[in-house]
Amino acid sequence: MQTKQLVLVAMFAALMPIGANFTSFLVIGLVPITLQTFFSILAGALLGKRLGALAMIIYLITGLVGFPVFAQFKGGLGTFLQPTFGFLLSFVILAYVTGLIIEKRQKKNLNTFLIACFVGLLINYVFGTHYMYYATQFLAGSDAVSYRVVWGWMAAPLVKDIILTFFAAILATKIYHIVQTSKSSPNQKIA
Image (cartoon, rainbow, N blue to C red; front, side, top):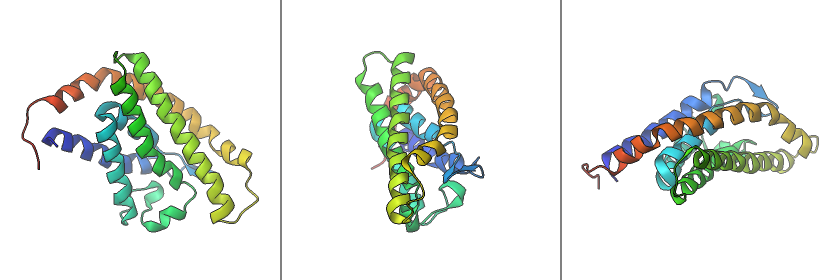
């Protein structure tokens, strides 16, 4: 891995805790309002499938070993039992798929980035919300929370995430070629 690639991966792994806790004091239902989806989409769009997913894996592992990098400054293995853990897992998948779509497309224009970023957002919501529903049903043993209520909790974050996904696609379109040039330029490799 080149030094610049390593720096970019570390940068996105470090942006995730900032995005997790910048606004996480706002909670709707069980869902803290964060900027994590925005940063994970950008990671996939700018770093590509492999490095974007790697940045999200590093973030996930950092939190699971106990560092308080998840929303509301949580961390540790107990996070597996949290209803929002599915969103954390989805960040790896969405970064990979977002990067994959962009890498596969011949034209790297705004339409490509919009499609890739919104597919990533869809993955985040489908995977995360379904995990949250099943976690409330099976892990917490609560039948009081219906499938409709869980999706209702996601309405406010969805508006925010749609706006931020548009912004991520536009931003990624503008700086993609700069990042890709810096990734492919000759540099000292790290073993």
